Length: 354
Image 1 (spheres, rainbow, N blue to C red):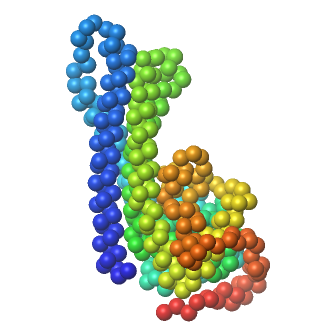
Image 2: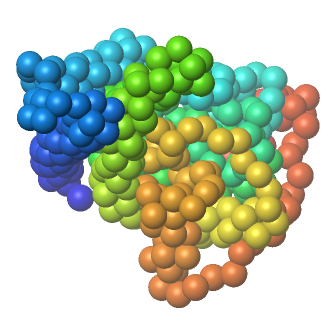
Image 3: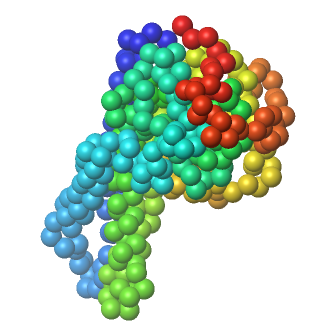
């Protein structure tokens, strides 16, 4: 895809996202008003004097408060992410800067990122590691190339061959190339805003509040019920926007590495981890769309997954189903002391980049 076509597609995705968000906010306002009207009727209206009306400006106040919470939450979270950049978000998710001078696997990761930056024509992103996560995963974040970050889990460094690590990094840099990281940062802010209504109801439904103000707790339950629809709609937006972008990033990875076995090997090893029941650290629902593969579980996880299934992605790469791969690496990592004899001595690129 040409760069100008990519930019136009990214802008179109942004416009569609904003329109969908506006429609979602409108529906959430209607849901909150309906839920509070029902709660008011149950508490007072249905049992009070005949013809008792809602308080003055009942619906206007409900609408204003809902918009303040949703749009205010979106603005606050987006402003925070904009000022902090991709690295701050990565740190919030438990990542730290790579340490190439003292760790062989991380030096290899930095070298691979350098190669993929050369192949893609992108500015080299900051390289980070999620050292506490033994699952195979990664994500890219940032508002632009200038503050972009690629973070890789320790499990990926431990289990992936160099060619597979190239495929993993190329996929994440594909998201940067296509403008997906900026779109994803916007989605984080939007989902945060849509969840604010649910959080407001949850605070009113607190057990202590139930004892002190039982009528207020009932209103909180009504707000929670309406807010849950906002939560559901927010994660539905993530899924709708992100699924096709994953296929595009997969295609970029094959283009830049000139091999389907790199990324294909990563996905097949993730399949093996899932079969073995290897747990991965949960990073929260609001950032699932940023990961290489989702790591949420539960009844709703499949329906709201921001990624195509692993089987679908593997079939796209190979044209057929493929079996999971062993997590064992073919060759052990070279000790750091030997690897640092000469710069890049044991880490020569496997692909000729042009």
